[in-house]
Length: 291
Image 1 (spheres, one colour):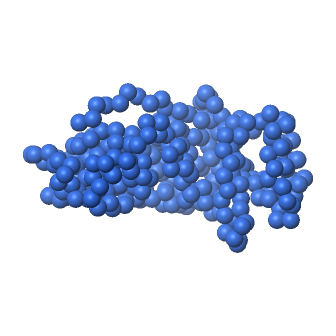
Image 2 (cartoon, rainbow, N blue to C red; image 1 turned 90 degrees about the horizontal axis):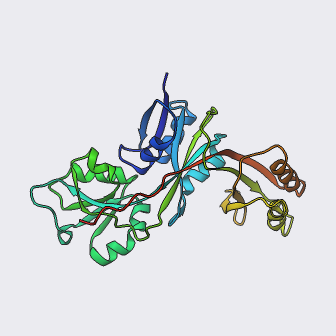
Image 3 (cartoon, rainbow, N blue to C red; image 1 turned 45 degrees about the horizontal axis):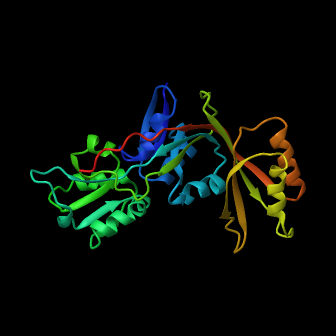
């Protein structure tokens, strides 16, 4: 029986591309309307695993994903995929291409719009912006309304799925644009080795210990353990109360990390593991000429 993989849909999203890059063998893909729907599908056993975005190199963390994994369920991260992101302006197929000057509305996910801010300001400053749950939802909406002078910011894959055509390729503001996606699930997986591995933890500091965060970082520093990210998220218990999400650039071992965690807990902090997992990276291909 094939495992079912829930992802942020519909078909044609970056999340689907990330899901298909994971070395999972033969699986069944299940598009979901939102990040929360994808994660809920795993929680309710409607899917075996879920793939959702967690961080973009330009726009930062996807807070809805982080908050769900911290507050809602015990659902470990099993793998990560880092995917290069290229955004494209697409319109519905029509006999005569729609010029940029004739477009009245651009539809896309908020992160995609933000990643193309300079292009929109320079070439389409007066255009109306409408937000959608995903770039693929935006592309689907534009394709279903060919009579409307609308465009979508979407993935290259959407042109292969929906009756769309490119207006302009590679309109993202920054060329070094990557998004991290995570595979989550309640059952472990035997995944092939990756070039790098990571462990993610959540640390809760004691409220009556000044300088506790510094002491937490020292526990890693003197052991020469590299941290690639540290980010605060509200505990939702009151103003000024935070969790700290920390990415550690190595897999969980038997000595080094347990020793660091024990030292941190001795300070009165709480340490919770969100996962220890392989990291797969897709290299960026050559850009297509704008057209």
